[in-house]
Length: 187
Image (cartoon, helix red, strand yellow):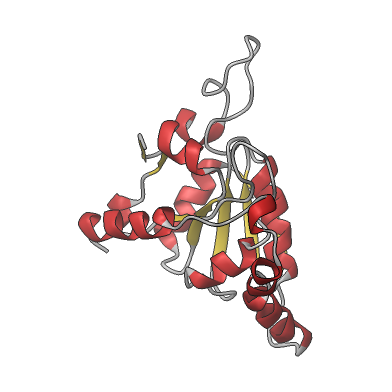
């Protein structure tokens, strides 16, 4: 995928706004939020899919997997605010898209109940290795475990995009995608 196509694709994946919170908690939101997950559960129940959470990998290991395996995908599960103000991994040198689905919404911290459906809607298939990334590796691990239960083989990018807190309480100096010198761009 060309950088221009990736930019358009990223806009499409980020540009969709989900309804959440009290106003969006009606029956329609819950009903539509389960279609993709139910389809994946049915396939898993029929024995056609077997997912697994394959554990934590260092950011450089995730990058190498993306370089070496054209089926592998990187899924950033941080919030729209984090993508915009902190930055995102840049896969343009691989001519591949960065997939983005919020695991939780900002500022409420409410879990995205349509997460699995949005992953399916992006075209990420259970036969693809999925590397998940958040700020520090906590949300992405929860998301990886959910997708594994739905038939995906998943990996959690340890230390996430920004890494762990240092002695001064700052991120970006200990671990993580950015500190590891991997390609990234400001939102």
